[in-house]
Image (cartoon, rainbow, N blue to C red; front, side, top):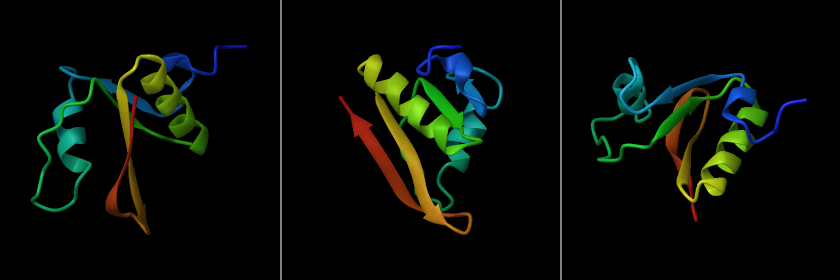
Length: 84
């Protein structure tokens, strides 16, 4: 069994800063023109609720921060952010 906090246990897509697709995913995280000037180390596009839990656990373990889009019916209405 893998460590539940391991990046490899995330079933969704994980993008690291500098990798192909990172900047587009960062910009796509906000649907309107008010793009934040934030550059997280990792962007996790979750497949399952457990991916969100694992990503937040990783961020807290590394004393980083985590932000998760919050919304309904495919519309993001904000972000939930966790800072250590």
